[in-house]
Length: 129
Image 1 (spheres, one colour):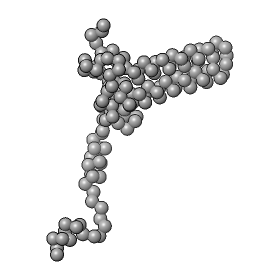
Image 2 (spheres, rainbow, N blue to C red):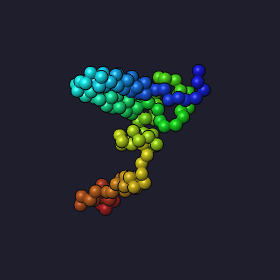
Image 3 (tube, helix red, strand yellow):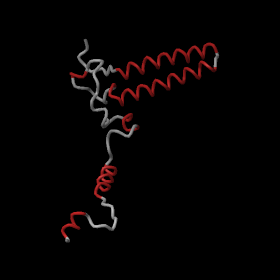
Image 4 (spheres, rainbow, N blue to C red):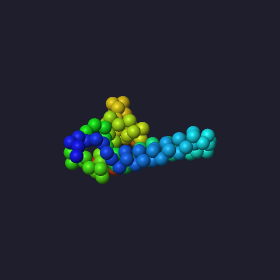
């Protein structure tokens, strides 16, 4: 039994299994000089990337770095995946993870904008009576 977090996750093993099948199909296509098998193998390998990414975003992967010991088991789900991981390019590609200072300032400024409609606010209208 390992004393270190080796990153064995559902997303990792699933992606590896699909990529292995795709590589076998691709290799068979190269050996038989079959364009259909080559294209099919490349498609399966591309699908493995997308499946792994989707599982990671669903919480079946792991954030970069070492996880807490309680999350080392294979079926441990990452509950922080919804917000994104700060140093994970996969989360950033999905629009999650680290927010830049410009985005944070823009979102704060947008939340402070009050639409101007010409009508006084209800509290101001009642105070003016």
